[in-house]
Length: 317
Image (cartoon, rainbow, N blue to C red; front, side, top):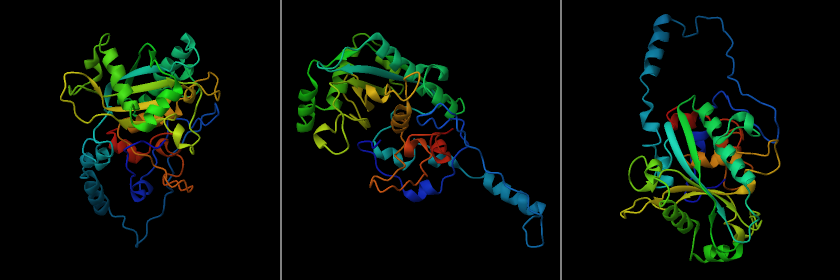
């Protein structure tokens, strides 16, 4: 999904990347696994025209071995300027703080709803309709990334859907303001330093799953635009002694529980948006012209499959 304050990557960069062999099934409204495979290269008999000498081969291998990919890592790559700061790190154990956000006119949030959210983030593959956030990134990263999510108690916003929408559209009270408000409340019962590895008083990973009166954005009505799913940032720096939100994800509960799967837990949007949280841009055209620079078979393009080789280089996988 399009992320606020995220710039487009060059189509040339994406078109030039090679899709990685998938260990993640595509999982588009189906239980079937569709795994990608590397293309086989057939043997070709050597000829006088071929560059086939042992010396030439050795030289080429030596030059390839000298390629330094460090400049492509996300901590140095220019794509990170899109958000202005880095959110979740891409290797090691990374902790997310996830909060169900409840508006006063929402349906009653049940223990089953909370358990679905927990399984969407932390569950085993067998417990969800496809992959959980944790199981997806463990596989996609070849074991380099372990995401652990803490699901907090539901936060009662205290106002109804229309009131929040009106305040948001006028700029009087935004999702960033709400994120900071919730974090201040959580600081009374959580050790927030666990979600701030670099100690800058800005949470590395913060996600809000909201329950409203059912209002959704249809892609056209700008008044309802807040009722969608996006990744953005609240603060780049923090000079106060209070914890604040940095990069965060705002998502409607129906994106997790949408009836497409059995069990009814779908994490495609969650996985895609967490890719933004770790620094990736969208790989599809914002002109909505049907152009798919990544061919529609990449997690940052059409929300399906694995991350491509280009993304995995950026992630240091």
